[in-house]
Image (tube, rainbow, N blue to C red; front, side):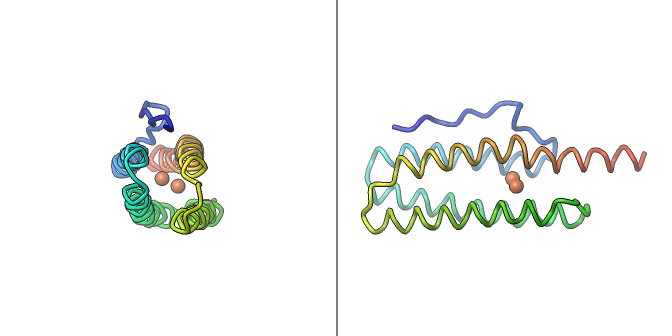
Length: 135
Ligand SMILES: [Fe+2]
Ligand SMILES: [Fe+2]
């Protein structure tokens, strides 16, 4: 069984809404790995929930980037899009009966951890610089 994701301060961006949503993504992931141990139907439902939540979160985060004129917005948005493409590919393979659950969990865990700690943290730094400049 894949390892749970443990939240820690390294993932904090300091933007409350984003932090709450990132914590929820960790929770969806942890529920998914429990579902994987139950049945493939439960696992498929868990993937669908995580995917839907990620889409909503990306919309919120992209709005924050646009509103704050984040200079790497397009690059960041492309990263979200390629995540969703890969997730969709793995989801389709799963529903076709392929044994991709381990790959799927590994992909999700690695992507979420590094994207949040590096890419999303860069948005938070940009917002912090803006607030310092406005003082
Ligand atoms: Fe992001
Ligand atoms: Fe994010």
